[in-house]
Length: 193
Ligand code: URA
Image 1 (cartoon, rainbow, N blue to C red):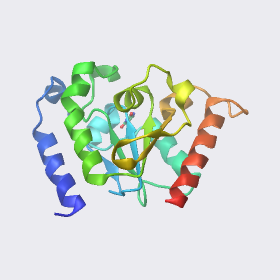
Image 2 (cartoon, protein in one colour):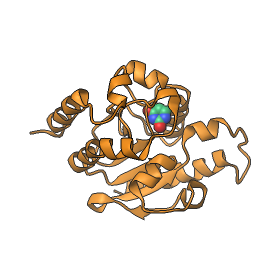
Image 3 (tube, protein in one colour):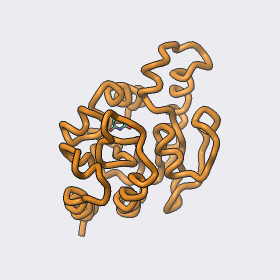
Image 4 (tube, rainbow, N blue to C red):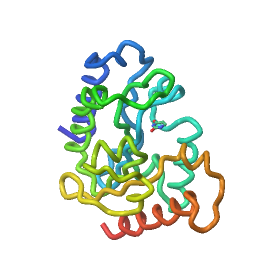
């Protein structure tokens, strides 16, 4: 079976999923976007309103900023990035995912990781960070650092674009400036692999 066929099987299961109460309130599952590329995968938090409506991750304002961040180093979801979320269904009113929702959804993320075996995993925001790394450190402490990930991958926590939308400054040391350093480092390693 090809990678695409394996992912399709998991997505079909996800579409039937009622493992937590979010199954009853979702409009669509939001499984992934981008290219099933084994080099670079980004894990976000959970679908918001627009993602739930369209069935695609990162299509709202935060997603547009994310696309710009990737574009600044010549990457895009059309060509070389696979994007998914920790939760595949939208929590009502965009509240933070509950531990039991993360637990119920985990098998889908694990399957995506196992099928794709990405070389680089970007943990976008604190929900992805705490799902993938056993740490009590906040994102500001660990962003931009490399950690060992599954299947021999390297993982880097990065800021969530919605945090950057709330922090306008681009001055040296600001969150946007830090993101710029981080994405350049990601591209440097990406080009080496
Ligand atoms: N924020 C996320 O973490 N994921 C999305 O898909 C959209 C917004």
